[in-house]
Image (cartoon, rainbow, N blue to C red; front, side):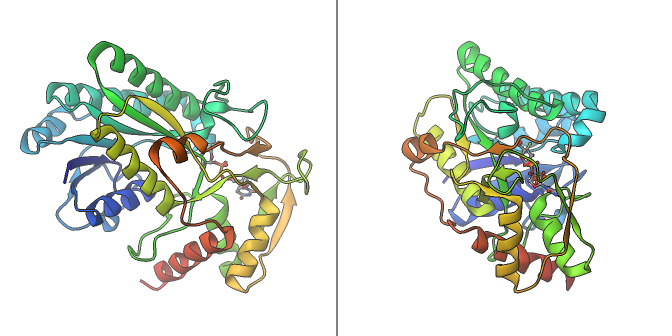
Length: 325
Ligand code: UFG
């Protein structure tokens, strides 16, 4: 059993990971400022409402708990917003991470799993994307995550901090056992928007159908949030066993077009998805699919959800349950 601090643990992926850690017998404390996350995502008694820039409160928490490791999710995640509010993204995502790393250093906590993103690759030259592909973020969000990866690389060399950065592809779905799911405000992600279109009858806009893909719509690698949570737990175990600092793609390696996601949602829900085709969304890459062989080989990770339909079904269950709570 390890004592783990989860920052951003009231958010979508952080909350799923915190619950999985608890199920696996670890002691978990969650730090979240609730600017985006929800207290109802965190099991009772484990939430500390702290912003990472509040060094005194973080210090006090580290003084009370002897953390073996940190899993660091807390960050702003909206690509479009990051283009309009770049300073805020760098201050929050880079500055917040640095503040956390300084407290970790003061308390001798030497292991961290970090939420990175496929956005560090920008427009890849080829696909599937291996970890050593060129890193060319196209927005401040992706750049802020890459900056933290680089800081972690330097801290490995200068002070022996061991880290795993997981570059997420498209997290989706929900874990039925936990009764939690994706609740972004505002929601920008494809699958929750598709499900809302079904429920409201308001059509969703498909952003562009003139991409160089089989049906003209963008291809993404959808990974179920429970499989993503499991990747964090594997990364943690790897670090606890003395694993070296490294970076891994977290995706299934299989890509689906937007129209394929819409069809999968129709099969999963038994309802038609109202949609219309609109212009491309600025900054979208045509195809983002992970080469996830390194995660599979090094961390022994294997996704449980292979079918997109099952992933969408789990999101549908959550979407319906949250409407009746
Ligand atoms: N899409 C639509 N209509 C919508 C919303 C999305 O057609 O209303 C399309 C997008 O163009 C894209 C796909 O659906 O092709 C998926 O879009 P999402 O917004 O759900 O996800 P992204 O791929 O844009 O973003 C995800 C993560 C980001 C991360 C990025 C990496 O959510 O945090 O991958 O590139 F930065």
